[in-house]
Length: 457
Image (cartoon, rainbow, N blue to C red; front, top):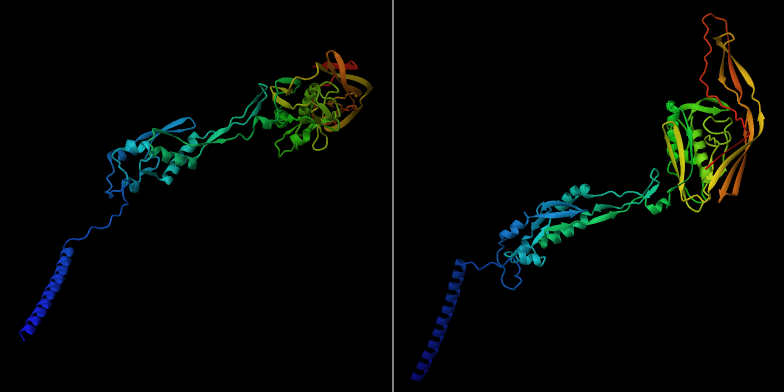
């Protein structure tokens, strides 16, 4: 009985000890929990680890990094230099990258191209677009300086590449560079020297000049307008050229004015008067240059500004002057109308002939007739000449080519001028207040005294 009692006492004691331990553990749990409420656990870091693996530290941008944005640099474009700050160029501090870098020594970062900055592209683009008109350089086209008889080469231009310059700005800022060279794009000329198709205009192959009354303003205007269409024309080897196709319609819409023209053998006022003097002067120059004359028509009556048999009329659209370049190099037409003279030069390489001669031989003459025009407003039997008469002529025109003093080639044309009728105005009025006949200032054509005539270059 005693043993049992002792055994029960032992078991009871073990149970009691375990209970005490359990109570202690529970109490310790609640004590720990109450202490945790009094002291908050540290929040996880929002910054990634530093490069060296240590825990990140709060960003503290150095003063030198802040000052970087205010630094002025040289912005170079097309040889022009502008002073600007990095801030003006859209450079900003990159806060995220700055938090992971040691910004105390910007020099070391610059050497590695690792200064923590970024580019505000919109701001940078706006500034570069404002700068672009100041630095862009337009290309210069090649052109023919006909006065100096030189061919001037083309020069390419340059344009600021705004979007191509953005990476350069950022790279220069990250390296703390003292200057940045903006990207430029070459702009080719629209007309190149090769595109002109002409390599030499240093020689005058042939030339011719005609004269006109400088005081006739409308006729002068027509002359200059038509000549402007021809000046600078390039005649390529073997290619046929048309006066009418180049000059176009001579209409009021195109700007031509009323002036003296020859119509049906009579000199009258008409639209685009003077155009035939432009075609005739051109005819004379290409004649002496040795250019092939494919199609030509002489006037219905001789012209006062050129020798008999040495003219070429044009009428839109059917009566034309057509030429063809027989040489293996291009030639260029230089046309100048000024101070009462129309002058054409044919420019190119050295002419392969020593001399080219115009010769004329009259084979037949036909006397002109006279007609009266009665006028009821003019006093009876008073007369005036509306148009002087001129004998009709048939002649042969030659073009002779000479080399080393010898005739090597010849062209021949048969030319006919019909007689020019003389018109006499006679008054029929018997009224006391009738008009008197007006004596017109006529530019008399002188009939050639010799059947033969020649001139050459």
